[in-house]
Image 1 (cartoon, one colour):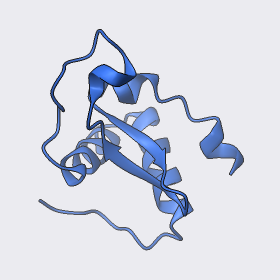
Image 2: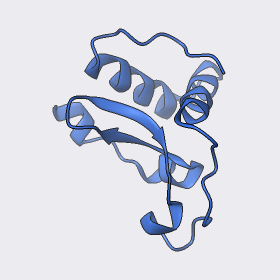
Image 3: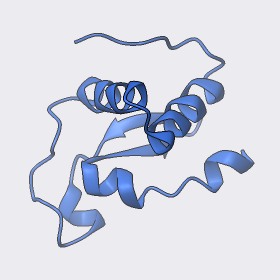
Image 4: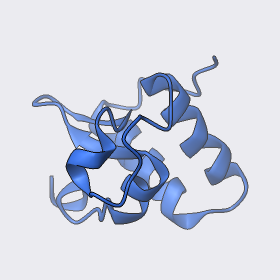
Amino acid sequence: MKDEQRFDNAQAFAEGWGLFDTGHFYMIQRLDYPRDVDESLPEEPVFGRDLDAYNHVYVQSTKGSVYHKRALRLHRKSIGGRNGRKSA
């Protein structure tokens, strides 16, 4: 998918999550091993679960972040819009 291929994960990685290709669609997931992505990142994950990362992106999008809105849109678009807001 062209849009997803152009998504820049740099900000997401700095926050502890990313938009990842699962082989079937793109998903917002936590960074399990942040230090593997960038040595300046924490060793432990920022989020306890993928759901926590998704909720972070959702909350930031409701606060007006264009970056987070785009990630959420691409996530939903790639899985056919089946995924509404998840709750913890």
